[in-house]
Each structure stands twice: as C-alpha cells, then as structure tokens.
Length: 189
Length: 154
Image: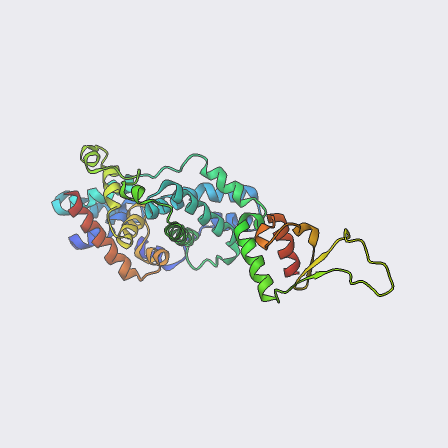
C-alpha cells in the first residue's frame, strides 16, 4: 500500500504521544512541559505567519497552547493532536487579530509604516538568503493562500489536514495551495 | 513504469521534502525535477520555504509554562470582565439596592449611627463599609468583585 495513502487512512497518533497526553491531562508537569517544548515552535510559526506582528504572535501562541492544555479533555483523537493544535493556533491568531482591530491600537502613522518584520523592497533585492526572501514575499498573499502554502510546505500537512486546520474542504486547500505558489512565482520574478 | 506528469510532481513535492513519501516514488520525483526546468523552479521555491525557520522568541516557553501552571481561575478572569459580570448580574437579579438601617422603634432610644449598614445587592449582603465613598461596582477592587461574584454563583 502506498505509504502516503496509508497515512491518510488512520489517525496519526503514536503510542508515545497518547501516553504524554494522558499524563498531561492528569496534571503531570513534566508532560505539560514536554508538550509545550514539542509544539511551541510550530504554533508560534503559524501565529507569526497569520499576524505578522511579533508581540501579537507571541500572545496568540500563548493563548493557543493554554487553550489546548486546558481543553485536553475535549480532544477526541479524530484527527492527530498536532492537527487539532494547529486549528486552535489559527483560531487564537484570528481572535488576537480581531481584538487588535477593535482596540484600534495602531495609529495612522504607525499603520503607514511597514511592519518591522517585513523588509522593504530595497532590502529584499539585496537579500541573499532565498528562504527569508521567499518567506517575506509570502506575506503579500491573501490569508487563505498564505496559510495553505505555509501549512503544506513548512509544516508538511496533507490537504485533508489543512482542511481541518483552516476549516475548509480538501479541494479548497489544494486550490489555495497551488494558487498561492503560482502567485509567489509571479511576485518573485 | 508510468511517467510522472508535472501537475502530480508539484502536488506531492512537499511530501517528499517532509519524508512522507515512499522512497521509490521520491526518487522518481527527484528525477523528474532534474529534467524539467519549470518544475525545478517551482520546487526550488517550495524547498526555500521548507528551509525557512521562525525562531521562537526567548522566554516564550517559560511564559507559557508559567501561565499553564497558574490556578485556572486567575489565569482566565480579568478585572474588566469581573466588573462587567458583577454589574450585569446585579441588574438582572433585581438591581434594587436596599440600604438596611435599623428603623427606630417607638419608645426605644435610637441606635448610634456609627453602626454598620448592610447593603443588599439582590440576595447578597455586602458590608456597606466596603462601599463607603464608592458610587458604583466599578469602584470595587478585584478581590471584592471576585467575592461578590462567588457569592452570587453559590
């Protein structure tokens, strides 16, 4: 059986992780610490990609992990824990983003400035690090395309998994991924 | 052996990067990319993204652990939420604030006015001295609001 097809047929939850989750549910501090250590980089990468603001990304990453840890009893195992957690991360980032919009914390002057996370065009042209340059251009994509490309390329999710995280169909995830990559190629020319 | 088309290769290339592919299929993908300039350009872009890392800010892990190990109630409830909830609860359960002072009984001396007054907010009695000089629930401290909310919920 094709390995990729096999992975799609059953939940991707190995024995070690199920034991870790059980211990975390029981309040084992070491298990909580290990869960955070294992998933914080990915959760933060997702919130950073959605928010493009260092402080907000950290807030959202913290909120996402706290929501997940406090809600471990609600995790049923229908999808992998990783996919479930990424869905929570996306929701947390969107909540933080909406909160920022409501508070209108960004002044007009600050809004006119390019965020510190994004280099300007001149810096882009001179940037030798292809990875950083492509990641910077990725910020210009619409959110759905940006997230589909990020989740597929940087996190290795299948289209079915992306559908769970972004609450869309697998077909829409595939379309957004390919549209996003196509747009990236055009912007990189 | 079936020749892989460009659309299929570009669709599954991220799986090869992440090691989620049968080794034989991964080899065929690499061979296709080596021979197709267009696929090579796209896969190079995908590979560049794959290699990009977003570093975790210093101290974030510790902050998450500290927040996760705090008592849950304090971690989630903020003073603004408490004040809002207490004000709303007071309005919903009858909102009438009765200041219970001892009525003078005919024939008996009037009690000193320095005695404590009890403020009834709905069914909850709150020592009115706590509210001396206070004009609204917004003036209550977090601890006072938590106590009030706890009494309302019990």
